[in-house]
Image (cartoon, rainbow over all chains, first blue to last red; front, side, top):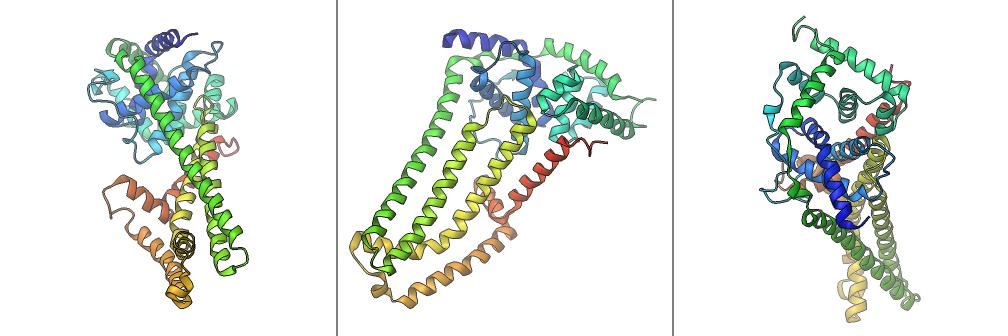
Length: 168
Length: 226
């Protein structure tokens, strides 16, 4: 595939899966500036790896793997705002601020996920997005049994933490 | 009471609404921006490559100096010490470049995060090594540079006692630098870069990296996930 054709294909695929970008950025960054920086880094990394994308795989799984890897390392880095900063008007995601999180339950869920470590954050996001245990295991690089155990443990933790917080 | 499965349904609804509210700026995905990112990465790789090439030239030049002064131990010995130092830096640089080039974010998270953390630890040890040994390197550097560029003998010019005392001062600076970096790494400077170096020196960042590796290993370990 030629570069312009490759790029067109890339643009279309990323556009079709932009929700992944939004959700990952929103879970790993609290403020808008960081979210935009992270989104830029994810797009750059996606583009870098796009040449090796295997069309037989699901694009969403591949995108999750890259986006979560970038997000976790971004989250762990202190000087997150030093690289590839594009100009202010080039915002990746428009109108996806806090207004998109409207229900109390979703806010509680975001808060719960916000308190998890970066690896468990990835696990919960993949689970909520309806990925199978096998797919989650593939993205995280752990066994399917391990995924099942962790999900069950997280459910338990969540039940304990949210007991009495919201309606019974 | 809410549980994760009930929230999963709400999450799906939230997902549906996101479709309507997210507008992705395709301008950012345009050729100019993607190529700009690519060229930034190429520049970074080229810069690291150039640094390694310069380091290699230093190793070779020191080797040549040792060869020329092999009979004069007082010159060959400091040059050999510097050469060992330069070779160690070169190896660490190559390890870092190779490590960075091998990172492919298209791999499972547990693998990539481990690679990234190992690379981070390597970089921290590199920074610690450079800063701590640099205080010892300047005396042999003075001896070699004076001899090579001006034909001067530092032992005669300054006296052996002066050179030895400088070495001792260099040694004394190491614990002092460690103490200062531990004490002030969080407060001394607003610059993130300087603060990061201080935290590297103090070992704070090394502890954080080791801590994350332990978390990662626990995450991968099924026996712990009960």
